[in-house]
Length: 240
Image 1 (cartoon, rainbow, N blue to C red):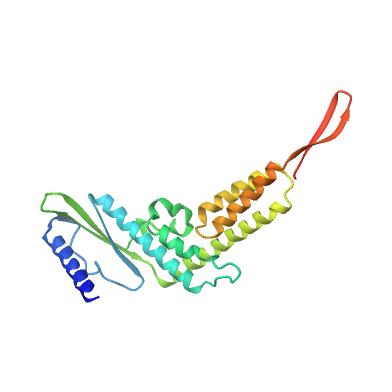
Image 2: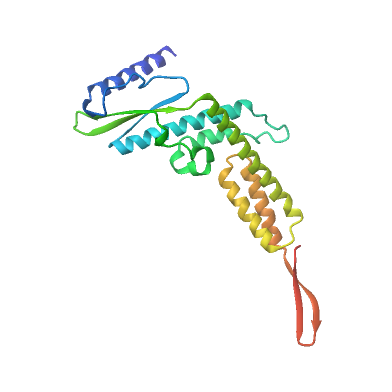
């Protein structure tokens, strides 16, 4: 363990030394004190990239990841796992693992991330650095307001949305016992497919089972003779 800690500290020193040897060639202004710090009701992050815009977007993604992490941890700590379905609320864990690392492409699926934008940033600072090999990169720092009441609201929004979609899933699956038209079957299949893109836990399997059930109903449809007259036959479709 001591060897591991020594190696970890040494690695940090090497990384820090590497950054300190890079030459600063431009910056947005005087370096503020909040950089790399921790302040109550704020998220402070930094992103890097070959240019200012890329580094800025990297920092914004970090803000999204921090907020996702905070929401997921709070949902996890306050949720109760149903005894009859142990994996029911595990979406929070998978949500954090899968989603936090892909916020750029996945944020459209999570409503509370829609409001996160650069327009809400309270302060920023960037610096352009040059390595020994003459390559250039930018470090972009953001200070984003994120008070406790906002976290509680996001947690509440997440739970409410998650519960709504769960009830929708349960209703769609239950309708498989009473559905009476091909149009309704196809509509329900489409809605269950949409839900599989949102869920990240055992509910995906439930949705897929529901889809399988509906497809079985489609396969069981039979053509039944309704009326037969001279030169005329009438049929109707019957669900099996």
